[in-house]
Amino acid sequence: MTLTSEGTRTLEQIARQVRREVLKAVAKAKAGHIGGPLSAADILTALYFSVLNVRPEEPTWPERDRFVLSKGHSSIALYAVLALRGYFPVAELSTFDEIGSRLQGHPDMKALPGLDMSSGALGLGFSAAIGIALGAKLAHDRFRTFVMLGDGECNEGIVWEGAHVAQRYGLDNLVAIVDKNQLQQFNWRGDGPYGRRAPYTDAELRQRWAAFGWSVSEVDGHDVEAVVAALRSAREGVGQPAVIIAHTVKGKGVSFMENNFRWHSKVPTEEELAAALAELAEPVTEGAGA
Amino acid sequence: MARPPGKALRQVFGEVLSELAGRDARLLVLDGDVASSTGAELFEAQHPERFLQMGIAEQNMLGVAAGLATVGFVPVISAFACFAVGRAFDSIRVLVAQPALNVKIAGGYVGLLTASTGKTHQMFNDVAIMRSLANVTVLAPADEAEARQAIEAMVSTDGPFYLQVAREPSPQLFGPDYRFQLGRAVRLRDGADVTLVSTGVETTRVVEAAEMLATRGVQATVLHLPTIKPIDADALVDAAIATGFVVVVEEQNVVGGLGGAVAEVLSDRHPVTVKRLGIADTYGESGSNEALLDKYRLSASRVAEDVESLVARGSSHAADEVRATKLGRVP
Image (cartoon, rainbow over all chains, first blue to last red; front, side):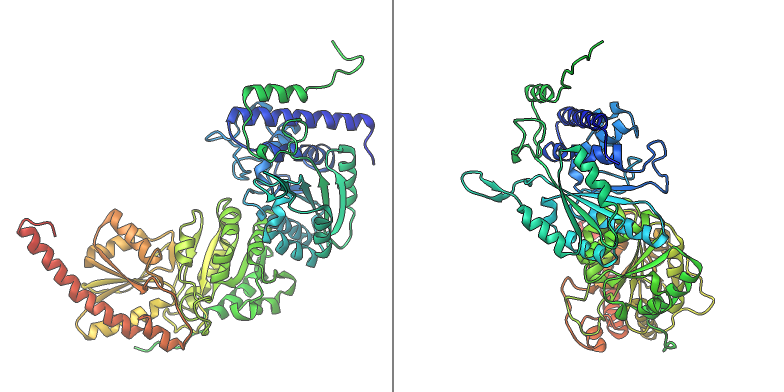
């Protein structure tokens, strides 16, 4: 089933709101990450609003699909999506990073219902997702497990330990999404002053996953319609785990943040926030209005 | 007094898990490719479909275990202590200990006696590391009877556990009537001169040392701590009050292990002199079991020698302190 154009527009609208909430929350907290949450926003929106079989009002529903944000430093994007999906009040996003808040800097499953795993030490969430998917196989449960990693995160050795095990156990109920935004925190040196190069070229990343026995597909991670289609078709793999390499832009949606590694975890000033929110404002559509 | 020979705890580990799996459908064993060394091969033979080979990749194994725990399984880790704790520490800290997930980590090849593998495989820090993690229960049984019950308690009690599983056959220390209680120390002997505190398979050597000491006029209380965390503070305080002098003996580095735990409790609640016998802030080496226990002074006779001299010096220190106090000097 493909999305209707109205469905696509709705997802795009939600993703824009996610981006606005991310920026407001980080600006208020004066801490947190920006670049990664913005690159992941469309994929997270597609997952929670169009792919995952979940019940926000019953977050521990045993048959729910599972999602693990292995790139846990993008937590604020996940929180924004969960709030908009109805897991908790949107107003609570303003408590992000505060002491005592359920919205910890990195996802804490003990603090916030709806999180299927704690994560944040890179690579670990991926292993846990493999365990969840393996458990589903052993118990003959039909739910699916989705896990999102960063391309920088794929530097971690544990990712490849896990990729091997997932292939060995034929975990076709597991879908990994690599948010390939091309930038890490400080990055690999490229040409020129502060020149930077991506952790992996497209071919390198594709070949690594394929070599580990995964079914590999690629998608424009900001085309929500394509992302939904990729997530849905990846679920249909048989006998091997699937990875979707999502080509994304770090800082996506705000012109002066895009492709700039300095926005990995920089806090916007009031002026920068206003400019960013203006760029992310809802476009005025014909016939709209009170 | 020689004790009857007993099974190696790794064999007990494999046998008991196999039995428990028959009654508990949640039980799984995850192996880091050492099942033929940890005793887990006995489990594989009985329950092949519940034995999950995770390869030589401990970080991921602990993460997979955490994921399995979230969907209702009770994963038991079969690995060497050095790799389970050393290699996979971050997975344990973040995915097992912090969310308090129901993962049972069995560290095989604990302590000094690791089949001549030498310092890479001799892990003297697992107690210090695992007891420093909030939410984790740490167990170190001494013999077959105790290991059997400790494993049953571990599997039936929710939450993360770390279990030391020694490699070599352990003499039978406890009789068939023994009842293991989680979190409780076991007083094996009473004596007024000194309290010897130990854990794991070292306790049997310490009891033998106490028997040797008795023939030399030193009467020792022996306190065995099969649960290192949560520690039985009351039992330690009672023993410290009764004898006024405590010596901890363990197959761990003297920094941070059981000795550290005992010192923490007693400095808070009943400060007495606590001496620590163990691996003296160094690393091990290959060698026969007898040669290692002798060189690192953890055999019964070496422990007896060292305790005897500590008791002699301890009482002279105490006398010095009394004199210093009478003279108005700070000792």
